[in-house]
Length: 211
Image (cartoon, rainbow, N blue to C red; front, side):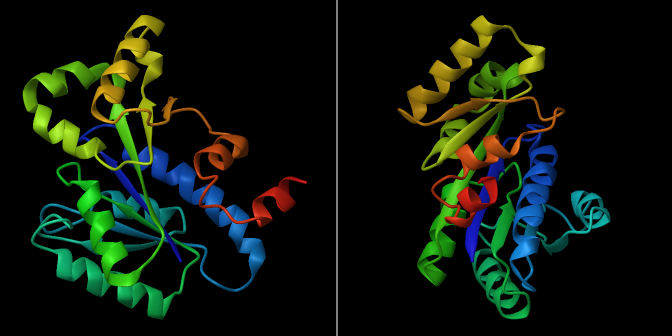
């Protein structure tokens, strides 16, 4: 089981990206056998889920974590949830969609230390609001980028090229050399895009499928 922690600030477009990511993985691994291709953990603040209803309507298996942040007070609950899902479904992929108030690197640390599972963080940022977010909550913004494997710079349809360059440079000032991918989550991502983004997590059968 491989784990992706999908991080991002409130309103960055995580669920839109998640739906496309999950579909890519389901389409790819459904052919591999009877195992469950993808299970999603939704980390919600409060007592009920919203995004999970949308995900389940797409035929995806979803488990909610309520009443807190998976990287803080609910670390033990996160461990219990991952263990349960591994035993019950044994999925090829586990995607943890962190609340916009979480620190994804803490979730990664919890999963890797508890289970030794290969885990990567993909952080989504809202290009249009990036500099306003930094001005309002810089320590939190930098924490969202810490130990991220890659960054998806979303909503590029709302900015010009100069702004994109400034946002990219700003992101890399917090995490030097991190791969940054400009996207618009309202458009369909290609299989080649996902192959490039997940290259070090994907097994050799991805290249076999392409060939």
